[in-house]
Length: 244
Image 1 (cartoon, rainbow, N blue to C red):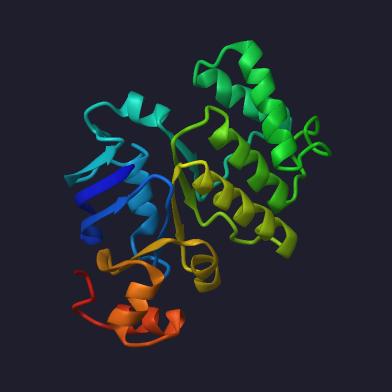
Image 2: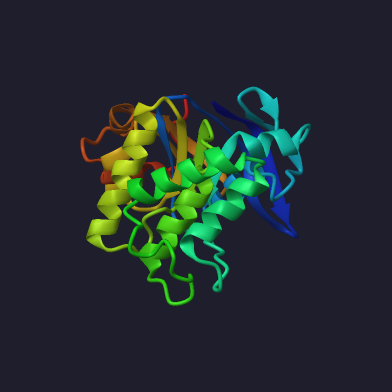
């Protein structure tokens, strides 16, 4: 489970995240939905220990991210907005490197890598260097790297951005499988179709603040509109939001 309590972050005079609070439960897909620049990525970076909050607290399975960042990182798998592959490493080497950084034993790591390559349909690229990979191939490698240590909490920053139809379907299927396995899945997006297709709960962020939180049906009901996209527009156009 992931819990965020009054996170606040400024960069110079710009407030990127303004007292954001929400919970993402196990066995649930929770979407951070908001326009570009809403504060979604900054929130994820604080959760993943890359950025320190000015105030507030982030918890992973009840563990303070600031208090024990090393253990917090063991409990999460992260697909960042920048995929960050090494051009001269193969797909398999990327996954192995990530597993070794997490201290996985060689025998179990090899089996885990084989399973991920099969699960993400990476046989054609497993021994190719990342230089020259398509965008979809790069996302698959980054996903496998994030999942190699079998984390209970998975954070995905716009995982289908720039993907073709088939790659998008594969990522959606993976997210659903992770949820069905009881994992906590938190992902950021500004694509309404993505949120509608995947999310059990939605946290709407705009201007660095949480404006609404709940199931898709609850968001639609509070906005008074049966169309989720129209409900979203109504929420982000409101100064007060619909948080309850």
